[in-house]
Length: 155
Image (cartoon, rainbow, N blue to C red; front, side, top):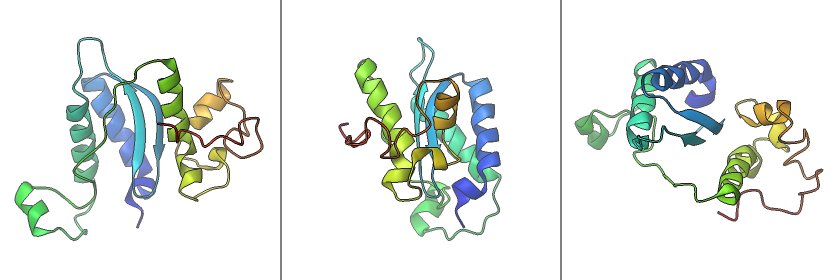
C-alpha cells in the first residue's frame, strides 16, 4: 500500500484544515508513494514550520486504519510507522534558491523513476505552474531547453 498517494484526498483535506487554522502558502509540493516535498511560505510573524508538519502528519495518520506495524520505540512515543521522525527545513535565501527548490520538488518523481516527465505525475503542483504559464508542458522531460540540467540537484 502506498499510503500517501492512495490516500491523497485525506492528505489534501488535512493540509487544508491545518492551513485554515495556521495559515501558510503552499508554493510547491509533490507527494510520492513514500515521501513528499513541499515549499511553504509562512506569515511574517510566524516561523513555526515544525508545528504545521506535526499537525499535518498527525491529522493524516488519525484518518487511517491502524494496520501498520509499530516498533516499540514508536509505540512508546505514541507514533505510527507512516512518517519519518525527521524532516529537512531550509530558509530560502533568494529568488535563485527559491527556483532551485521548486525545480527539485517538481522533478522529484522523475528522479525517483516513477515517470519519464514531471508532468506525468498527478500529485504535484507542477500542473498549477503549467496552467499559470510559469513552466512549459515539457519541462523536466528531457525535451525542453533545460534538458541538460539536473533539476534542483544544485541545492
